[in-house]
Image (tube, helix red, strand yellow):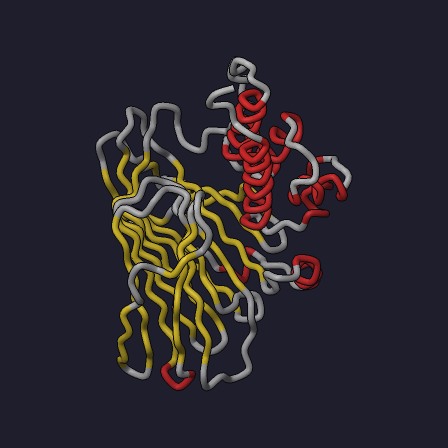
Length: 325
């Protein structure tokens, strides 16, 4: 049949579904075994699904999307697979299936845009201090009363079982993070959404014990939050994920100069593998510290930017990765 998709398109859709599941599992810091337990599936089934040996199913897509808090991303990959399969068989496209109920992170009718996203990581030889500043604009019709942030660490990214064992024995704790957050000169309260050994997800609330300060339609405001992680749980690469429409993204890494740090980076999108950043980080020396600054305008939604480093004159250091957004 003219224009009919071949087996290649169906298999491509299978692999894209598998990659989507694996990507979200890694973002959430879960092993295949841990995900299987959350979903109530046999661990071998999750492994076969991620390898593409099992064909995608609606039940698996819905369960994975819910447990990984992936929005409609995994569900949409399953829909694409179903469409490719129908086209290959010469069938008329089936009516779009009803998607699973997805939790809306912000108020219905709200539309949050990040006008400026500024991240700074500073290492003192023992601890990493992360400071995030974001200028948020509400382009929707309803007030916004909370903002979702994530903190994820993985000391052994190439070995999830070893990493999981490490964090079971040495879990990341709220106490050590010492999280602080402010907006409009006011302290922001926060509420935990997910609390796992190597992954934290929480709401920053536009209120405190003295009152409320929601982000109303048409308004823009800077928020700032910061936390600390030791180098036994953090490591030598730092990933930024673009989860909301963003106009400008900036990252600064600061290390002691006597460690002789070098930095490089990669970009990964939903449709392409990791490739070098389009521009190199700008290096600067000041007061015994070496900083590396990198920025980009209008980054693609769901793009991931990873900056990695090594120390050519190292002290005793750890290795690993982390991501927050």
